[in-house]
Length: 185
Image (cartoon, rainbow, N blue to C red; front, side):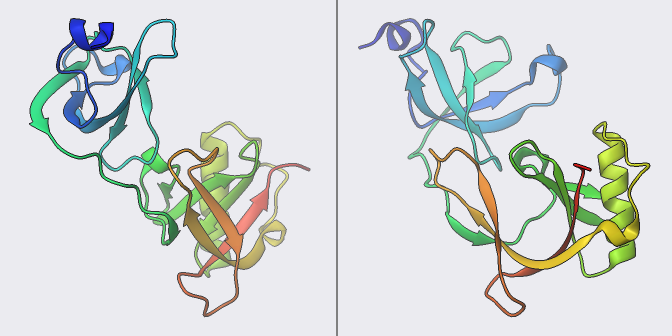
């Protein structure tokens, strides 16, 4: 048995947990999740925890005060991969803005994308989201939006990115119409 398992016998793969974010301690909202593994390569052992609804793991010390070990132990569910239709869920990088789903894509999040076929609504949503996250949106015009069809695709658990946005054609399986705006002038 590893030292982590000796000191924290409930800290093992498959254990359900409740997690409170640091900013919300001590009595903030709890989100449930599952321990997907124990990372013994770190100087201090860390648990890999996937919160329900999330696609990536948090690295959490087994003695973190915002972590509660629950009694339930279950097999770790496989993450689905392949095409999907995004819904607003900030755990996966999709946000709701003015009634639309928006996301930042690109290596540094330099492209703002709104899922819609309405250019005016898309422009309002990406400008609002860009302003909220700190971009200077004053120099952009409605005509700067690029319209296209794409398919969003979940990547495997160990991939560098959680999801990709791939070019598609109207009518392709799970294709959605987006307007995107590059914030790089």
